[in-house]
Length: 127
Image (spheres, rainbow, N blue to C red):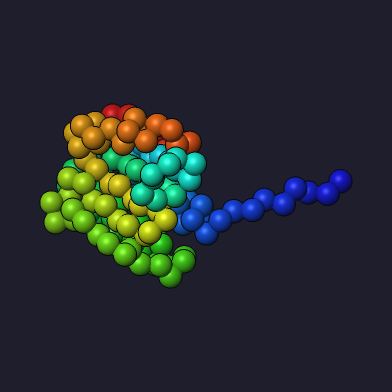
């Protein structure tokens, strides 16, 4: 019996690497949102997680950057919100990482805003 070939895109792989960087630094409620089928989506994938504090979101962001750089040699095109740490956005063109404190994530509800996308839960740990 022949095996089925699995075709994974570079964007999918990058989203998984970003998620792994979040999980490795204890990011909570990590999800990957596949937005490729959503009209008007600003990226192919969103990867979201929650940090315990602004300092934690910065540490998660640092780890995502190092993990992505070490595995895929990519660097974010844009980094926003790092100084305040309430919502750190890392733009890798097709993949956008959103690292937020709990209150910010609950307020903006990106999972509901982009609910037409396919969401995969990577780590689900409520506190």
